[in-house]
Image (cartoon, rainbow, N blue to C red; front, side):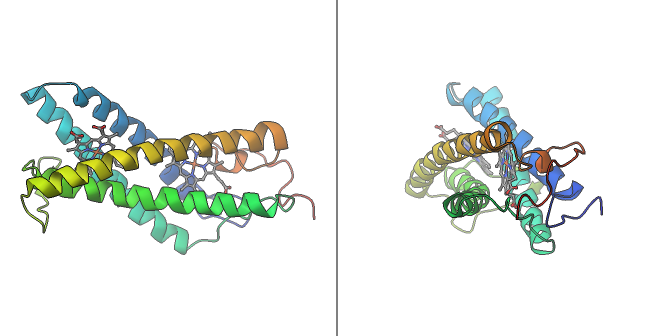
Length: 191
Ligand code: HEM
Ligand code: HEM
């Protein structure tokens, strides 16, 4: 089964969701950093729009990805992985998914509240039920910024854990998420 997950490895669809989201996040952070220091100008508004479109796309992809995850087996951790590491892995994955959903929502409410309406790809106007409200906009800005920092910390820890598995434990955890097909070393690890 090329497209679906098995209990040993991620399928093509889950891998595509994973790496596409990673690329979009790099784009989203790059645009955010580029626009932060600019004075209000047409250029800044353009970058805002691109940042928002990328963020909404991350939201939609994450919703699809979670539905796909529910309909598929989840690859099991290597059998010899300590219990606390399994717990930490599940918790950090849950935290990543939660932020990938909440972050775009806070961005949407923030920008609508600050009177920067969200028009997805310049075509679909998505109004916020909270409307224009400067105090709410400022509060959401703080939440959005805080979540961005937490997300960066989680991603760094996540990538470090993947490298730890690959280089130190020398198991299949990274191999089975690589975007290209790769031969597994030990499949379901030692009993
Ligand atoms: C996963 C998706 C997203 C990520 C990772 C992300 C990340 C960021 C980051 C790092 C910043 C800079 C924060 C700072 O100023 O210190 C930012 C700012 C901003 N984001 Fe997002 N964002 C996402 C989605 C969205 C969405 C969907 C919207 C709107 C629909 C949005 C609207 C904004 C706005 C208006 C700002 C500027 C706020 C300010 O002046 O600080 N973001 N975002
Ligand atoms: C940049 C943003 C990234 C995000 C938001 C992200 C998010 C996630 C999430 C939510 C999962 C859980 C998949 C599931 O069980 O449903 C996952 C799995 C995984 N990610 Fe990432 N990831 C990112 C980047 C990376 C990078 C850079 C690497 C490699 C260095 C990586 C390696 C892995 C591996 C190996 C797995 C599989 C873990 C397992 O088998 O349980 N990820 N990622």
